[in-house]
Amino acid sequence: MKWKTWVKNNPDTLVLSDQTGFHRNYSIDPYDGYYNIGPLMFPVGKVRRDLGTKERILGLEIAGNAKAYPLNILTKKPGKFRDSLAGQNIHITVNDDHEIESITNDRDEKIAHIFSYWFAWQAFNPDTAVYQENKK
Image (tube, rainbow, N blue to C red; front, side, top):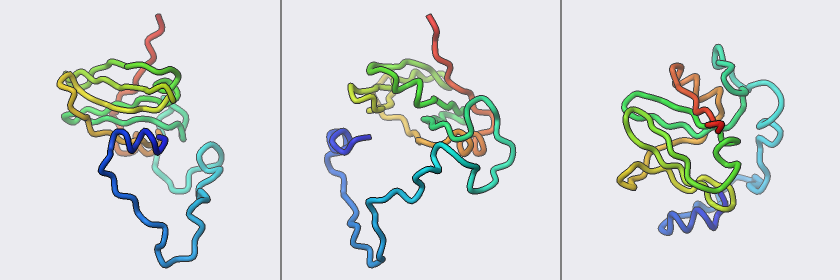
């Protein structure tokens, strides 16, 4: 998510300083290259093959029911995705910059969520459902 979007949605955010007392260049991503290629850094057991091992997902868990939403499907185009999980309607809003801006229920209450890799999400949620794109 871009900083401008974050601040718009979270205007009271506090920003940590990069003055940590350690000599480190915080403008360089230490995991560059890890995201798309190479093996996992740590063993996680058997990885389900529903999605690519390092595919990025939005993970939701409601009343003990888990669901993974592939980001490459959600962020294709701006708009609102509607789905349900554990009897609760879910609204996922994607802005014009193709960022997930909010995840809410019918009462417009925020739903707790996490952005993760598929391998990690399914390791902690082995019975997770996977959102399927509705092909009309």
